[in-house]
Amino acid sequence: MDDEIKRAIRGIALLNASEHDGKTRNDAIISKIIGFKPELREKIKEVIPIISQIVDEVNTIPLPTQKSELESNFPELLVVKPKQDRTGLPPLEDAEQGRVVTRFPPEPNGYPHIGHAKAAIIDEEYAKMYGGKLIFRFDDTNPENERLEYYAAIKVGLDWLGVKYDQVKNTSDDMELIYKKAEEFIQSGYAYVCTCNKETISKNRREMVSCKCSFGDLSQNIKRWNSMFEKYKPREAIVRFRGDMHSENTAMRDPTLLRIIDEPHPIHKDRYRVWPNYDFAVAIEDSVDGVTHAFRTKEYELRNELYYEILDKLKMRKPRVLEFARLEFDGMPVSKRVLKPLVQEGKVSGYDDPRLPTLEAMRRRGIVPEAIRRFVLSLSFTKSDTLAPFETLESFNRKIIDPTSIRLFMVTDPVKFAVKNNNMTEIEIQNHPQKDMGKRTVKIDGFFYVSGHDAKSLKVGDEIRLLELYNVKIVKSGPDIEAEITDNSFKPKIPKIQWVPAQNAVKIEVLIPKVLFVNEQFNENSLEIKQALTEPHYLELNVGAEIQFVRYGYCRKDSANQVIYTHK
Ligand code: ATP
Ligand code: MG
Image 1 (cartoon, helix red, strand yellow):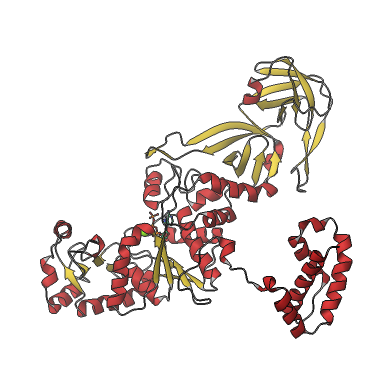
Image 2 (cartoon, rainbow, N blue to C red; image 1 turned 90 degrees about the vertical axis):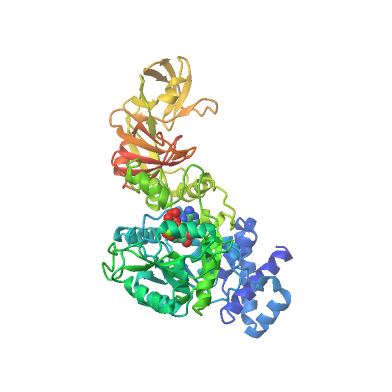
């Protein structure tokens, strides 16, 4: 055994001993040394006595001596690998171990999608990376759009993704605080109540002129503020930040902070009618929640100035705001604003329609949460809006589901196929080529179906193999194929095709999601439905089972007679 390996074993033993009160054990070393030199797996019998010997030696050395030998001879083992290697996320600026607080702040105005997954996973991974915490906060201050159904759907989505948060809250539970801050703002003159109409406000913003309300005195503003809770109707009065009407940044031209909304709130019903808008609520909430690093998508970048100004004027602690790119796929927009009309107009069957990028749809289609996480972490952390390739998500998914997907035969556009001299009554087929997933018995009587696609190319005289069964020669082609068994030897060159037994084939439909938008237009052919036949064993699988249909692709069982195509 060469010295390099002995040295590696000694290093590993010392490290393990020093982490366990000076005592190490053989089994603690074995897997690590194989990780270091995989080729030792074959020679493990020879290595074990050496490990035992070194373990015995190391165990006789006192702990302080173990540590000093480790430090002087094996410094490389003491270098702690930065955790970001695991996630691919770059380190955070100004992040202190144990002190990082992130938040995921969805508005409960729609179903969660894979873009939310990106945000939530990044928030969670950073909190984990720095031993900090993640706050899950519903930004629910626009009762016009919010519904209890959406709060629930977002929570279900996060739980499905496996995103763990340390605290959950609603912005709307802090309304008293938000009113207090609004009053402070008005009192100190940093905000005023504006009663101009919408058109005047937009025009003044465009033309960079202050509107007359901004010159009103404190008593006018306080009186109007109080009236916002009673007298004014929606849109008759808003609270505006005294920004800078000449700012290049349009977000700073006296933006709205609070407005009147009379729709009942899903939780608080009619208790409040003056509601903060996004900028005001998010800044205050992030600050009081102790958020240190607040992530959002980059279209909010222009609003950072306002965010910091609000907190500055209120003398509140300022989190650091950071942006990342929105997640979008080619032909699959990832935004509630786009998804909602598709559902409402009945273009798709619902939020779980497999064509959509919602989490419900991902789940139904057979994309697993771990694949979404790996995919999100594999996207480089940039602000540039590159379209992410859906195939990358699929390839992560394939790696994860392949070891647990049962292999079954399924044929599309079925064509009858009779073997005249069939000599079998049943056959046992392995459910998975490598993993032990058991076997199934398939009854055979010589009558089969094969895929229309395979049948088309068969001519009289061709030899093919019916997978798992035997080799046959075609004696009659056309819509009713006939064949005769030749032999059972392995012939590398002949086509090998799958089949299903005709006597008890199970009819299923295969839903194949295609690209949702072509040239920004809804693709009317975005869902293909194929008629297919599969083996009776299909009926024994649970809904939700992932199947690899041999020579076809992965599908998820959606119901007794329907599967959804996952990917190749
Ligand atoms: P939408 O267009 O879907 O309404 P939104 O930003 O209004 O998007 P929110 O519910 O307010 O949706 O978002 C919660 C969090 O998720 C925010 O931090 C937001 O930046 C992030 N997010 C939303 N959509 C995406 C996306 N496509 N890619 C990455 N992050 C997203
Ligand atoms: Mg939003």
